[in-house]
Length: 426
Ligand SMILES: *[C@@H]1O[C@H](CO)[C@@H](O)[C@H](O)[C@H]1NC(C)=O
Ligand SMILES: *[C@@H]1O[C@H](CO)[C@@H](O)[C@H](O)[C@H]1NC(C)=O
Ligand SMILES: *[C@@H]1O[C@H](CO)[C@@H](O)[C@H](O)[C@H]1NC(C)=O
Ligand SMILES: *[C@@H]1O[C@H](CO)[C@@H](O)[C@H](O)[C@H]1NC(C)=O
Ligand SMILES: *[C@@H]1O[C@H](CO)[C@@H](O)[C@H](O)[C@H]1NC(C)=O
Ligand SMILES: *[C@@H]1O[C@H](CO)[C@@H](O)[C@H](O)[C@H]1NC(C)=O
Image 1: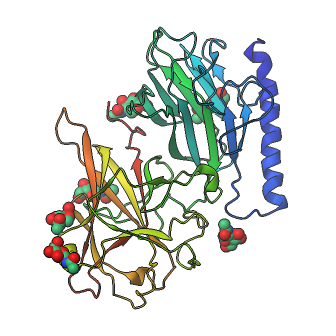
Image 2: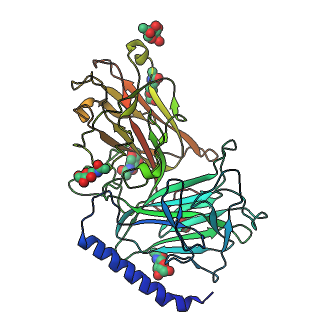
Image 3: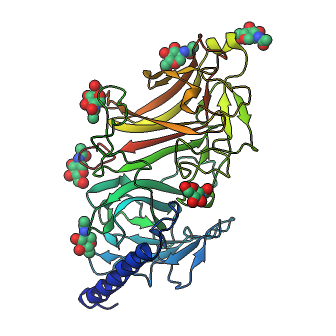
């Protein structure tokens, strides 16, 4: 391998070209909002210069020949490893990994603004690393995205050992997005299979403090702002009452939408209206996938008022304590009988606190017109030992509404970085 001092001018020139390319791209055409400026899919340690395809047919570029090739602390000591052959075919980016006993950094020259950063892992034992464990920290600029991370998959019954962690990071002017992987000590290793960076619309999840903006309700106090100096970690994105939606079926932002089956408590009536034409008068059309029925599927309580009065629609979401969480609830009326404002009114509780005393269809004011509502809640750290908490979302019908019922179509929860830029307390 050539030494780094020779590589630096080349990297610099590549960056300049990349930046010029970005600038001409922006200047020559105004792309639709849901075509991101940056959409990088890097297949870590795939020596193949050719692109490889993932299970959805999306292209991933090998990092070996790329401009993002990692700069190691001790002169390129990272290794490449192929995932061991299992019964299932492992596709990009999970078939190869970059593994190291010492730290390494990827440098991404990206456009200004908020980005999705997705770290893809295949949690298997890699040939050549049988004797050591993965135990590492991942840093992005001033944020510690993962600390003392093992990539261990807790669900032993699942064959699935591949997963990704999604973060939102705002990249400032003249800043690069650097991702550094640091093993806990020389007896442990760090690894990564794939890195995805996708630009997002500025106002999708960030809510910076502006004079005109009243902020997001902080359920235990003042309004809250999600300023550009914060990072977010996606913890739940659930298509309530609906089905799994893969990354390539999103609105071009490559988000994944899971089912809520594992988190919904109790009974509900699943509603669906696949033929409904949606009207995006209140929210942008990239808020959630349209063709894939996030808003056309919902859970409601059903028509038995007596039973509804005695119960809640409840989701229980395990979260870490000691952090603020952004909770986004998506609503869309899909029942053709609900054509008058105020027919389905309900109370929303988030973590036992009143989030909304009178949630109402007037938010959507028309059948098929989706809307979402954001709330911020602090999950206080209680005991020294205990670090896990079940965040409850409860919807309860109001007895003064025409149908004593409640509805939810989609639920997103993000952990917010603390003032140190950390997502863990240790
Ligand atoms: C990112 O990496 C580049 C090149 O290694 C370096 O010049 C820059 O200072 C780094 N930026 C941050 C914020 O760490
Ligand atoms: C949110 O409310 C809690 C409880 O009143 C308060 O301690 C905290 O400072 C508030 N956060 C913000 C950012 O206003
Ligand atoms: C979203 O709306 C924009 C115009 O506001 C339009 O150009 C774009 O095609 C729409 N996207 C989808 C997926 O419907
Ligand atoms: C409605 O729910 C109540 C309480 O669970 C139950 O006693 C009653 O039989 C139900 N009514 C109908 C029509 O199912
Ligand atoms: C609904 O949830 C709220 C908040 O968690 C709780 O106080 C209330 O007792 C619940 N109601 C029923 C009927 O379970
Ligand atoms: C937050 O992370 C920084 C380094 O990124 C570390 O120095 C600091 O101790 C951390 N704070 C907490 C509370 O963990």
